[in-house]
Every structure is written in C-alpha cells, then in structure tokens.
Length: 155
Image (cartoon, rainbow, N blue to C red):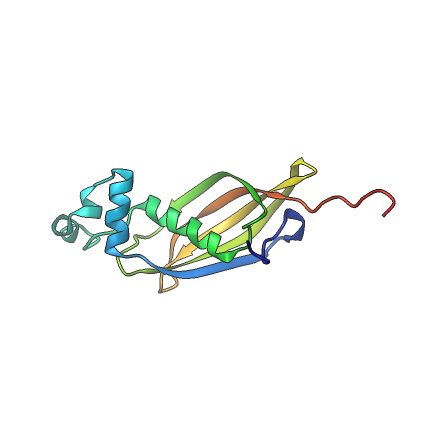
C-alpha cells in the first residue's frame, strides 16, 4: 500500500508522474515470446534481425506496453485508488532494443467526473522514453479512479 496514492479529486490537469529507468534485457524479450507465443523472427532470431534495417533484435511492442504498466505501478500513484484500466491508445514510435533503459511519464490531460459520484475517469498522456530521451511509445491511457468521500451532511 502506498501513501502516495492519488484519488480522482487529488489530481489536476498537467500533473505528471514519472518512473524508471527499467532496463530491457534479452531474457525479458525471450520470456515475453514464451508467454505470448509470439516468436516473430525480429524478436527471437538474432541472425535474421541483424539483416533487417533495425540491425538487431527488438522488443515486442506489447512488451514495451507491459513494461510501461509496471513503471506506472512503480509510481505508487494509483496503488489503492485505481478501479479500472478502461482502455488505451498506443503508438510505437521507435524500436526498443535489448539494454535500453526505459522511463515512463504520465500526464493528466483530461478529467471527467463520470460515471458516478464515487469515481471519475482520467485520461493520461503517456510517453515511454529510452535512455537517449527519445519517445519509443506514446498514447493515452484511460483509468477510473476512486473519488474522495463526500462530506457528511452537517459536517
């Protein structure tokens, strides 16, 4: 449990959360291939990957996304307040290579008090960057967070 968790009501437009770096390893890529069943040669065959314009093995886009969700957890910002990860939009802007160090930035860019008085929707602009500061993945995440309890009548 984190004492840094934010409710919907504690967030403001433009507020940012950062986490990382997290190094991507060859073992991460191989493990993800086994878990997902995606053994595409660009991710698993070093000889093949070396002959492509990328020049070597690259991480799966979905692995980059999974690492980003782990980094979001590392912020501690939503540990006890997230009720749902409703949807996401993701663009894979650059390849992620073994030994890249990834850092996540989440910025609150939309607040919506719906669906109920006990929870609100938040849209975060997401950017995953490598050790050179280059964005490798970007998009938006839509979360539902707890709201602060309403004050009791007469309080």
